[in-house]
Image 1 (cartoon, rainbow, N blue to C red):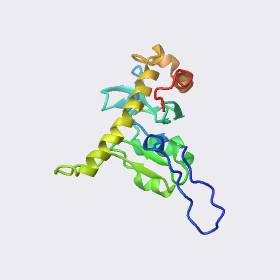
Image 2: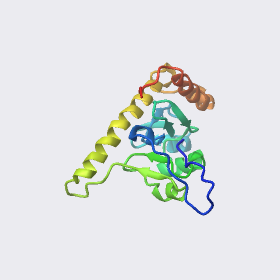
Image 3: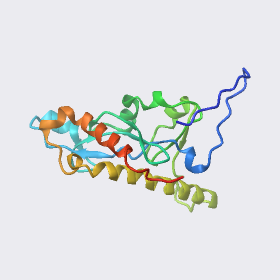
Length: 197
């Protein structure tokens, strides 16, 4: 992750590393709706906690972090499909991995600015139009973030190509689903980088 350079002068704020735009977004929070369909549990209480309105199916949800080259740098445990984006981010331990001056890219719906700024990191989300046309600066910023986001989506699609993650995960392997997802992400990291510098 991008971190502040060591500064031996006490009392001065750490200096931010100067990186090209592409390298600035070292940790990327993708849409938390990276959900994996799971077989419908028999218990109604389990059905309720795994139900996802977004997918209209019972799902597991996870949070992933992507490096600028498209490698997975963070894989959370799987959570029930009904968990909120905020709750999964807090429970996943991702916030503890952030360092001062890190840049985090996320969806517009990501309501975590307060938690990320407490870590002295920056949350980069596309600007909101708020009923009017975006300024030229906001349009440029949106295009730059979107161009990086494509690589996040490509990384997710690469992981979803594993047969175990296609379709519906049987309840019989739900106990090892965390390990399955982790191994799939690790194997993706052995493939050629998605992005060449």
